[in-house]
Image (cartoon, rainbow over all chains, first blue to last red; front, side):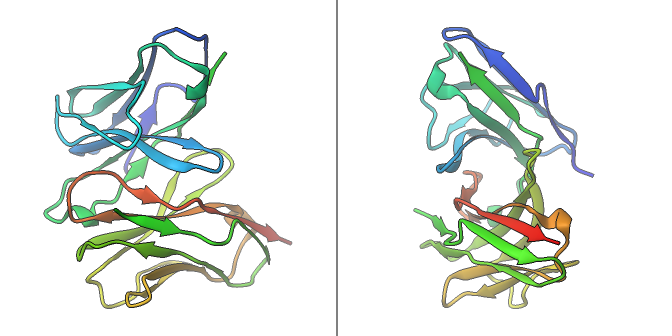
Length: 116
Length: 115
């Protein structure tokens, strides 16, 4: 079975803190993704990576950065957390097939981040 | 740009009835994939079923089937013989052949199965 784990289920931080969200997958997937989920807005892509040390901006990268030093691990970094970054953060991974439209993404359990 | 539309914010269904969750999509790509995910109150997104744009047959996975009508750009999820454990949010999503650029999600349908 595909296993995607995230470092915390719940996290409470203060405004201005630097926050690290960690994601690890055990299926040797090339692609990894970070989404945030907000009521009424659905899931939105923050960043993705298709290889070690590679990263691409998604739809809402402002205020975030990422790091992928190892294939199995993809970190999301909030350099200076703000209250509008309170959200559910979901990590996902997938193989990179010959036809990317067939790549099924598997998700972790999510991290509910509250910034006070 | 891709777009997914789910027009049913919420649905109440009696246990053991079949359920159809609507999904329409818009894309200019010829090669794309359509996915359905289930999200229980715990928050995890669970992959249910996949349909490729070139697949001629509708996808099925156990009690889940995908009613794919390419000309209408619709990809409805059908759950047969619903169970109380099916109560959850359901999201339709799509990917394109353009690269690993993430899924585009609909806003979701909140399904509640009543005993």
